[in-house]
Amino acid sequence: MLLVLCILSQITWWHTFLGFKEQGVALNDFVHWVPSRAALASAFPVSSSSSSPSSSPALSYAVPFPTPCTVEEALGFFSNLTGQLPKFAAACLSLWIEDPEERTQWLRLFCDEPAAQQAYEACVRSPLLSLRELLPLLAPSFSRPRLPRLSSSSTFDEDEEAASTQELGLILSLLAAAHAPRAYTIASSPKALARETGTRSVALCVGLVAEQRESLAITTARLEEHGFKIFGSSSAVRSARRGPLFHQEDRLFFGACSSFITQQLRPGDVLKALIKPSSFRLPADVKRPIIMVAAGTGIAPFIAFLREFACLGGWLAPVVLFFGCQRANKDFLYREELLRYKARQDAAEESQGKKHFLTHLFLAFSREPGQPKTYVQHKIAEQRNLVLQLLQEQQATLYICGRTAMAAGVTKTLAHAAAETLGGDEARGNAFVHDLRKSRRIVEEVWA
Image 1 (cartoon, rainbow, N blue to C red):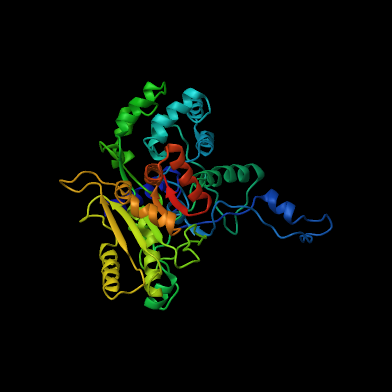
Image 2 (cartoon, rainbow, N blue to C red):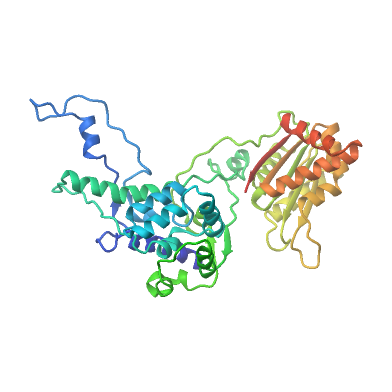
């Protein structure tokens, strides 16, 4: 409930900050992108002898997001309110900073000067400082844009139309600039879902990104250390009108997409989504072993693989999974399902079956009470003989899914194990990993 309120507070704050509320525009009012008078004139030129438009190509113009939509959708769905804008987009907000000194300093923060880049990295990018936090500190003179209205009786002169177009439209465009689609690997098998539900659907494995960040007071002090003047007074920053965000000692950062999926979506809601081809594909040869390495929500594509194997009645070669998480009783994702596949494998082996569902399951828990920190690369090092035997003798494919650091640790461990086993040096181990990548027998989907 707290998270939902935080998300709604962002929308409410920007609704007020951009002047919607003051100018009588409600969250459920509609926003429309319309072409300028100049664009209409070029698309539909009017001849001097007739008042009707002459024939011309159909009008087309780019918009930041589709409309009509409500103000709440424009802010909450299409705008990047909690994340960070590209430096160019943030710099463009100087158009609405009225105080010259504030405007000059704001532009300096986002320029390419080495000292400014260091300040930006330390004070904005690293602590994930949002515009909601940054604008009141460095640019309290930020002015609210005018809101153009459309009605059957509305008439705009050229200057008024230009000002209206420049203000709200440009700000919404800038806020939407970095709101790129987020990619999630599908955690379901089409065959399994068709059998279970009779409909076409997909399953996702989503982990809520919720991170604690340093207090605003610490970040403010760091800005001053880098030579930036805090124009928003301390009392203004702590003022009740700024909201509870400025009262808390530490700040909570929530991932824009993960918080939307896990906290805001409700059954029956409609999403804008697309499906892109994945780099994870099962080998064409069903007699090739599969080695899967995952940490956390990186388990998603491998659950899809295992569900596919279950529908096929098994794979014709060994299936190995290395899975890591923090605690066995907390975030062991798909625990019951994985153990069920392993039990099915054990039963098949007892009956001397040749089908594989989950031949080996190796688990690594990094925060288990009373136990040393164990990561997937540690388990790979323990099982290096099995892994290398499958890769060398049976031409297995190795799939890795999770954070970039985990994937780097896995390939480093594999190279070290190969060097030891093959009797070579580090270069030979790295060459072994390189050859696997080149032949697409190491396949990765990773994120920072």
